[in-house]
Length: 366
Image 1 (tube, rainbow, N blue to C red):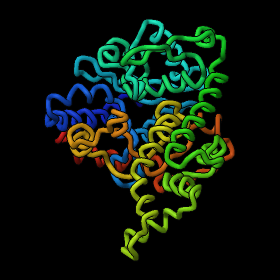
Image 2 (cartoon, rainbow, N blue to C red; image 1 turned 135 degrees about the vertical axis):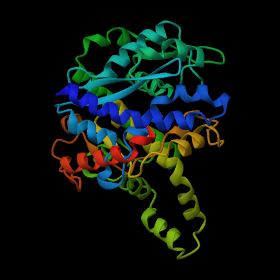
Image 3 (cartoon, helix red, strand yellow; image 1 turned 90 degrees about the vertical axis):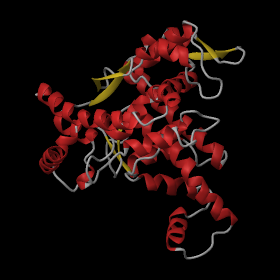
């Protein structure tokens, strides 16, 4: 059964490699190395993006259909010398790759790895040296592991000039004593607190920004727009009305309203980086879904050539929020066991039929 699922998904990955290679050839030479430092983020957005408009049918949705498991089985690209291979990882309560990567970060910092002072990413030469140890060969993923490991107190920053260095703590050396489920519960708690703290940089240290708010997003929401509403409600702004007014040109926004509208874009990237991507791609508790198919040329050009990189955070441009998200079996186990989810408009069989038509129509291009 699983061998058949792997074969089916290999056909989907052909669409990724064809689309990526075509767009990659058009990227300026000096930007190409950067792409491989954030490669999984490109694959991630494709993996969660609809392949065609009917039914929000992303590659991750088909992985769910073809791999029947109590956990989550996900496809991961591995890049070596510009060659890309795909491997599969299973996420369960007993065996979880993020827990393994926390063990790896303890080893890496003890081997004197150096990190960027602002982003917490590995410096390029150490990324080349150490990135293969981690589940995702992606520098923004490694930076997130550093943030969580620091929150957990398993590594600590030590004095260093121009770069950042860490060392393992006693907790880090004894991390293996925790069973995987207990460690994941601690990680989820840290991730929720970290998410809130990032939003405090925009909304201030308001009491509503707490772990309970993040848990509500799991238990009550499906649409990412609802997260925006929840956040803007904190400061008394009806963001839905502002969006409607702007779209329909009803009235000229005042200074506060203009500030709110201009903040939507950076807030969306924070929603992705500190909620959707960690709890989705890294922990596999939710499944993000983008409504529209992924446009390789447009996205790669935007990220790496149009000057949209942030001075304060080199990798933030690769994040953009999905349209909606659904709980995975792990998510139901860890954070929202009673949640009732709205089913897709199409059945699994109908989605597979659409996929076969899609492949037949486009097979000549791959």
